[in-house]
Length: 289
Length: 124
Image (cartoon, rainbow over all chains, first blue to last red; front, side, top):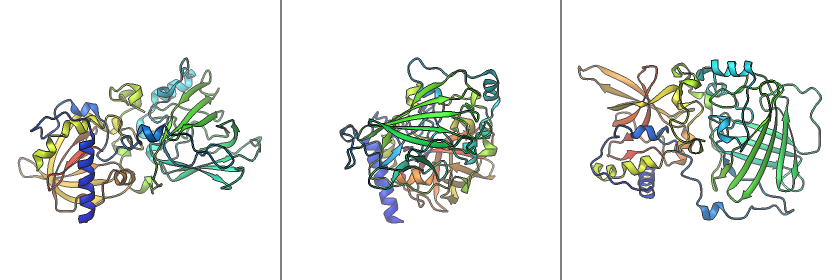
């Protein structure tokens, strides 16, 4: 325990010295208004451990055959709070009337992710994830996305040239087939479970079994995995829309266990609807991903 | 020693603006505008998912002892930020600053924990 406490104390000290300082001696408690700048839980930060720009901007690593190497542990906060935060220029989310009515009626406690169910696509929980290819050398026939959260789950992407089944059984992550376009991995997914399964975000954006997602992943440098996702769901949206949420590398990290439903006490205490609360607590969208 | 740490409080807060959250909306469960500062004795630590929790007995003005349920991030994230499951143990007296649950229950999101030796376990 002594060693752990020393490590903990050193970490806290190191963190405080590494921050921009606004010395206000004698300020022993948080002042009124300071809370409004933060919505974190103690110990909940993943952002400050993004590598420095010197590491992030190094060239994209490549496999022996020249293809970009996507391995590594990524943190992509994705469309977690609101898909609209990632809308590309000129894009808009236009819900069909029934879908808007449904979204407006949703309560946050009914979000499947709060119940420790999978996120589906395009949502991704704010926990690390890893891309693994099989076989390990040569042309990949399968890719696997291994998620630390929201539950220990995975996505399977078929890279062997197969087509989608004509009538796939609906699943939370759908049926995914992938191919390369230059250095960009393109994944086409259909066959999703319907409106009663995952939400796109905390806001409750819905989907139907008509959902199709086209994801385009490009490792633009050592530390950045660009993710551009087109959402096509004529059952819920008047037109497709495209969003971008980039993931950042965490060198040296490993996946850890996260059994979400081990001690999930939150549900009975979640009392608002998404429209009741500002998911960004007043922050600009860009700071609130 | 406590004064030493207090010098840096404001800077630490500025570093947390884009901190991560969890498997549910913070704003749906906690009110960032309703602050609480609690001092009490640790009765239990749960190093569990989706949130680590610890519980403290707080004595109110008329001598009633109230047990508070205090929520942290998840153990996987806490560990990566240098925390350990031994950050407090049963019997420690700690001060916790956080945001109250919206439903009025004796539950809060712990923003900072002042440990027995005066160390502030901050928001990271």
